[in-house]
Length: 355
Ligand SMILES: NC(=O)c1ccc[n+]([C@@H]2O[C@H](COP(=O)([O-])OP(=O)(O)OC[C@H]3O[C@@H](n4cnc5c(N)ncnc54)[C@H](O)[C@@H]3O)[C@@H](O)[C@H]2O)c1
Image (cartoon, rainbow, N blue to C red):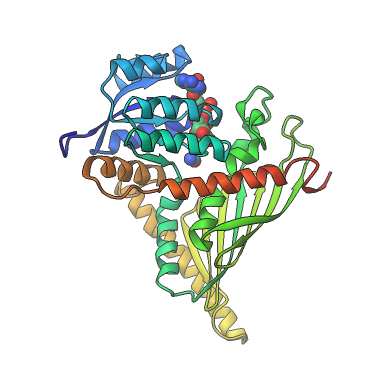
């Protein structure tokens, strides 16, 4: 493609994540343009088509590929549909951006990756939380050595929205290999990998809180053995709101990020006197004020970019300008490998559970 013209995008799947993140991000990205949309649900397709003022609306994916000249297919459908759609897109010569999890098994992922390599197109899995401003800042601070060596990472995910959706017996979450866990866990897995390097799950504990008759399990804790330290992932469905907290333990200091509030505090430095405890509290108050003010200003001035916006923009740039893609195939493959291991360990006969 000639350099510098926007990447021509076809979106497949116009549901929640397409409407909340992909479409708004693509509309704001000068490196890309939405050329066509596809969804099996014709009523939804027409309503999104009229909002986008386009008549390039397809209920059949193959027709979209054959009738439109696309550079990139953006896959926002449920995970079990990803392999077939991604392989067909690659076989038609389109680069592939796919929502997490790109596949439900390593075997499926490798088939997608092989199709992309065979056809000379790029493959990128959405790992949006790595590109949230507060997480990018955290990664920079850790990489600079400011906290010393990383020895542990704890990631806590509270997810009311997903747990609510899973209450509907017909929702596709309930057909995933580990139910709602399969939907949520890719995020804490790639976040843990970003700080610990390669990780392997060594213990899984599952608890059913009996609040959701359809979800098999609602609470899970996973212990990860990482190249650089130990990690713990906790997911809790019965929560009053969505939240992700990342705790990084270093040899010099510790950091805690509240991803939803874009807030970061440092803790565990200095002496043990009463005065240093008071200073630590004061320092945390100041950090929270600073984060709140900074985020408010960047939202009000339109400079706040969601993780989805940044990853989509960078992937479009990588196609248009030949720059590195934001998430490599190897990084995405590692997420699917760990997700598959956790799924096996969380199976009803294997996980330690208290019911
Ligand atoms: N990165 C994130 O933060 C995040 C958040 C939510 C969802 N997701 C991911 O996004 C994907 C979609 O999730 P969602 O919540 O938007 O789902 P959704 O059910 O709201 O939307 C999916 C849409 O895909 C359409 N569809 C399904 N199969 C299709 C096919 N073969 N051809 C055309 N259209 C098809 C459905 O009609 C539906 O409109 C999933 O992989 C999910 O894990 C990611």
